[in-house]
Figure (tube, rainbow, N blue to C red):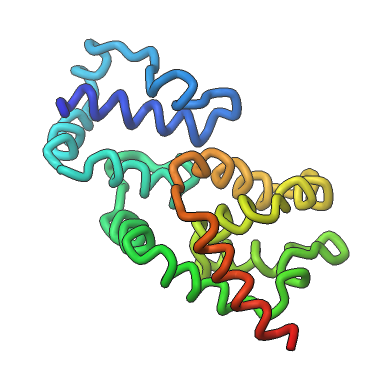
Length: 190
């Protein structure tokens, strides 16, 4: 990957996570950027360094997810990438760890008196991974309910956009993780 290609990927992801109407998959990560403008940027050397990484795309994605697309490339942190890669490498184990924090699924998703649901609080506190919330939503489709109950809530609006935009990047075995959920919550039903 060249430094300019790295810059284009960075801009595509930045727009993907911050612009509601831009979908990097729909537009095949294409963005209108000018190479001369790139050449005049003070941070172009950061992109040269970043382009040499084998995990360049994962590194950019991890930092975009962590910062809701608002991070400048010079502020990227290695721990964002390390955390995301570790989660994905041990997906079912990490997912199981995350849902262990939830005792009652209904209570964890319920919005009471316009207060944030337990699952969202855990996400904001970084006690649970965004991938876990996405996986649970793929199984239970509760974002629609949260949108209705948390209308005009700035915290939920920011997290919702990030989760929605991140969803196509998260791949998992739905049946395997569904059995993890059933097994975990059946313990509390007995």
